[in-house]
Amino acid sequence: MSFSIAILFVLLPAACAFAWILGGRTERRGAALYVAYFSADVVYHSIGSQADFSRIMIGHVVLDALLLLGLSYIALNSHKVWPLISAALAFLPIGAHLTVALAFNGMQRAYWMMTQLPAIFGVCTLLVGSIMFARFLRSQERKKINQI
Image 1: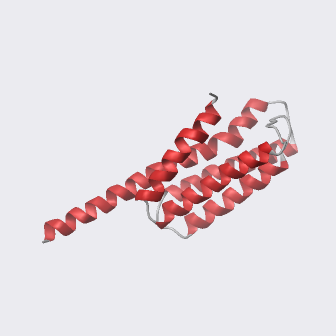
Image 2: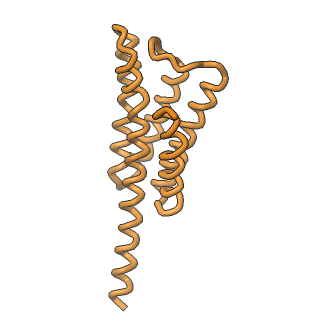
Image 3: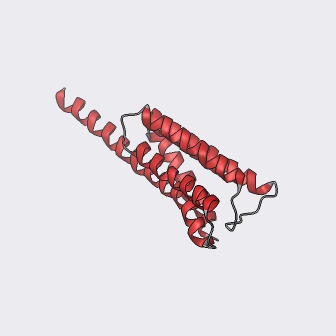
């Protein structure tokens, strides 16, 4: 099993389920956005566009731009840090697309890393943010119990 497939079928469902069940509105929005992003990526590749890191794939430019816009919206309408980190990570593939468009020098592996890994790290920030939110809720419940 390749690294990308393992992430898609193990980390994404686990992090998003955790965020959906124990997170707040921000975490649920982030989970929905990441599920939509990775689902659209699977559909994009299943309709015939094979991964090719030697050229710019317009479909990925669009998907990456939509992810950046969605995460930026979540970050600007939230009081939490993880969406800001995820939005910053989502900007990296946009920079990679622009770099390749301006001057491509054959570094396909670096291009792959710049366009694929930030979304994976973003899912990790979603998971950490959800864990922190769940801990916050538990601490608030303990405070209420201790006040009684």
